[in-house]
Each structure stands twice: as C-alpha cells, then as structure tokens.
Amino acid sequence: MPPLRSLVPVPHLTLHRKAFIALAALLLALLLIFVGFSRLGLQRGLGPYVAEIELARMDWLAERLQAHHTQAGGWDSLRGQSSLWGRLTHPGGGPRGPGGARPPSGSPPDLPSEPPGTAPPPPSNASDSGRGADLGNSPPPPGDLRPLDRGPAPPQRHPDDIYPRLGLLDAQDQLVAGTPPQPGGARLALRGAGGQTIGHLVLAPPQGVRSEADQAFLAQHLGFVAWTGLVGLALALVLSGWLARRWLAPVEALATGARGVAQGHLHTRVPVHGNDELAQLARTFNTMAEQLGSIEASRRQWLGDVAHELRTPLAAMRAEIEAVQDGIRSFDDKTALRLHRQVMRLIQLVGDLRASLDAVGTSAPSAQVPVHPLSLLNEALTSMRPRLAQAGIDVDTSGLDALAAPSAAQPAPLVRGDAQQLHQVFLNLLENSLRYTDAGGLLRIAARLLPPADGASQLQVQLDDSAPGVPAHELPRIFERLYRAETSRNRDHGGSGLGLAICRAIALAHGGTLTAEASPLGGLRITLNLPLLDNPAP
Image (cartoon, rainbow, N blue to C red; front, side, top):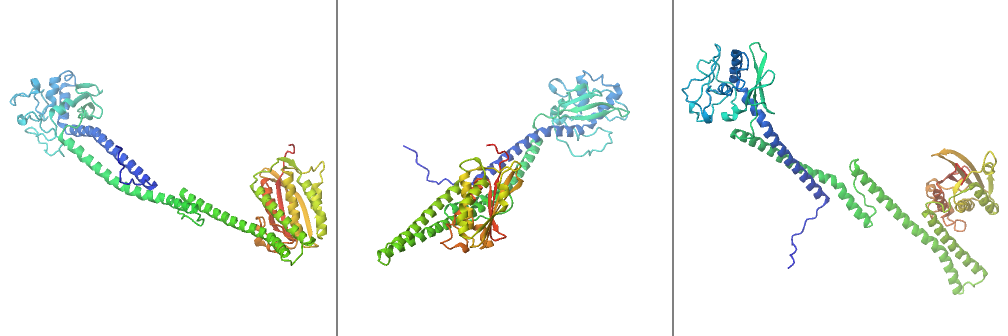
C-alpha cells in the first residue's frame, strides 16, 4: 500500500527565511563552539590556578626547607632521602608507615634540629581520619606568635593529592626530591640568608577535576558562559531577522517590479535606498524599465506613423477608383497617371521602410574594403546637379575641391566600409537639401581632415543649406524614422521621413557619426565624421 501523502502543507522557504535559518544555524554553531572551548579552557586553566593558590599557602614549608638548607649547608642531605623529604613536607612531621598510615600521635617527630627562633612545623591532627589538615589554615605550633588570619582559604585537598605533586629543585633547576616540575605547575623561590636563590619549591597541577569545590567552580562558570551565550544568541537572532528583512527588502521589491514589467506595466519603478550594490541594482532596474517604456512608446508611434503614411496614398487611390466607379470621372490617361503616382509612392515608402530596418539592424558594413568617400560624394553630386539646378539651388564646392583632388603630397582619404551604402548616404543627404531648401537657395559642401581622436584620424564632411531651417527643439528628432519637421509636411515635396534615419544607421555601422545643427546659411547643417585608414593598403 503506497504511503499516504501528508496533509500538512510544507511552508515555502523564501529567501528571507533561508537567510534567517542560515544565520541562526551559524550563530548556534558558534555558540556551541564557544561553550566547548570555554569548558576546555576552564578545565585546563583551573589546575595551574589551583596549584598557584596551594603553593602560595605553603609558606611554612618554604621556611622549613630554607632552615634545613641553612642547617645542612645545602641540599645534598635530601638527595635520595625520600623519608626525610616526607617528614619535611608533612605538617605533622612524622613519616608514613607501611601502606601510607601515620604513626601514633604520641611518636616524637624525627626531624633535624632547627636553629633557635625557627618555628616548629605544624602539629599533626590524629583525629583527621586520613585527611590532612588545611594546609593554608593549619594552626601554628605553640609559641608561634604569627597571626592566624592569612587571607582567604585555599581549596581543601587530601594530602595524598597534594604531597605527591610537590618537588624541590636546586639553584640549577636540578631535581633534589619529590616530583619533577610539570607543565602548568606552580613555582615558589627559596632564598638563603643572603637573599640569594637557593632553589625552588614546585607543585604540579592536579590531574582532572576531582574535588567537589573544583567541580562546583567549573559548573558555576560554565553556567555563566552558557547563559551569556544564550542571551547573546537570542539578541543575535533578533538582529539577524531584522537585518535579513532589511537587506532582502530591496530584492523583494525588485521581484515585484519585475513581475509588473513582465505583465506589461512599464511604468513600474522600485524605491532606491542608499548607495550599496542593491541600490545600484534598483537604479539599473528603473533605468531598464524607463528604456523599455520609451521603446514601447517609440514602437507605438512607429506603427502609427507607418499606418498614417500607408493610409494617405491608399486613400487617394480609393478616391480615384470610387470616382471612376461612380461615373464622376472617366478613366483616362490623367487618372491612370495619378493612380500610378500613388502606387509608386507606396513602393517608395515600403522600400524606405525595409531599407531603414535593414540599416538599423546592420551592425557592420556588408563589405569591408578601402573606399574613397569623396569620390562617392562627387558621383552623388554629379547625379544630383541637374535636379538642383532645376530647383534653382546653387552648389558651392570650394571647400571640397582642394581635398577631393588627390596629389603626391595629399593622397585621397580612405575609409574602410561599403561603397554602395556610403553612396546612398550622400544621395540621401543631397536629396534632403533638395527637398527642404527654397528655390534660389544655396547648398555649400565642405570637407576637411580632423586631427587623430582615439588613435585614428577622421574625415569630416559638412553640408550647409539655406532657409528654411529646423526649429531648435526639433533638431534632436530629425534622425528618427518617419519624423519630419513641421516646415516639411507638404506631401508633394517631403519624403517618407526615413532618409536621415537610414543615413545615421549607416554612419554608425561604419564607426562614424552623423549630427545636425543650425546652419549659418539659415537652413540645416549636416556633419558626417568617418574614421580614416592610417594604412591605405587593404
């Protein structure tokens, strides 16, 4: 029988939840690592600390060993004498019997004689039942006038835990008796009558945490560390939740904005806060949405302009045909000529539209060969001169002839590109001046070489015509497809509005520029810049 699917819906892990869970897991792992290292550090540091406290409270043993050194004249009497070392290090002064048992309390201590004025060792407490007296707070012997209060009491330990860890080193750090020094152990300097160092009393740290006092101390500090870590974890979780929400809020806004743009709401914008990477991403998104909106508006205007341009000749043809059908006008040669003119206008418009789309979509010229652009300009001008003369427009080429005539000192400039496309550019520019210059006007053509810019010289060709001009606010738009200034709306003389758009697309494909500005002659100045070949060899 297949297992039944759970009816409990699985919560969707959003980016905010994933970030919060990741931060929480990281913080929890850091807390566990912190507690573990804290416990390890306390366990390792507690032994040396206890050894230091224990040894600091055994000043009576230091005095006894210093007195023995003075009486015996050195440590030679202690070397290899474990029984004497045992009597010196025990507060009761008596050696241990077999099995570690103490002798009866009435046995006299077998100690070396001590100089006058030296305090005898603390007496043994026979009722201790196997546990040594408090080393730091053991009562002084009779006649000892030292105060009983010697500071805070050290941890109470069994003698079997302390004395086996004691050792004595001479001035050269050589072991005299007891246990050798251990890492982390305590060390107390022993000084002679003249103040010189005669040796060291060493105490090895206890192995592990065995006493109740040590365990209580360790548990108390670990509890403090644990509570501190839990409070820190709670604060860190609250902070991580706030930071995750704050950091990911722009991402959620971008996702919402992207959904809006995908649904066609190109006016969607996302708020921008700060100057970080997310703010830059939001600005880029807003710029993209704005450009998409501009492209969509241009597309709608493009479709409207195309429909308007196509509707005009079609309406004229319809009117002619309906007039013939209704008998208002007979189908004669004039009617056929008018219909033919409208058909040719449609063919020209469709051709210009296709040429505009091909030119704008072309990223590079179709043929990359060296060409002479001024020769192409002269060819286009030669073919246009009859029409310019018929329109009463004079042509001034004084600024072109000197550069167009090649010589040994001044070779003809060369560019790499498509000769047919460049010839079309010059024809369209001359056609534009012919259509939009009043009769009796002037067309001035000039060319010159510009100094190297960005590593390459450039050829500049300027065409200036006389009135009428183009208003300043319409100059940036004259290179848009199907756009014509208000002064050229006459369908009988104006073109389709695609000639300058085609020229600019071809110029950009050749690595050049095409700009427009007001002409000193009162009309329009068109400036074409093309990069030249430094090495004319193909």
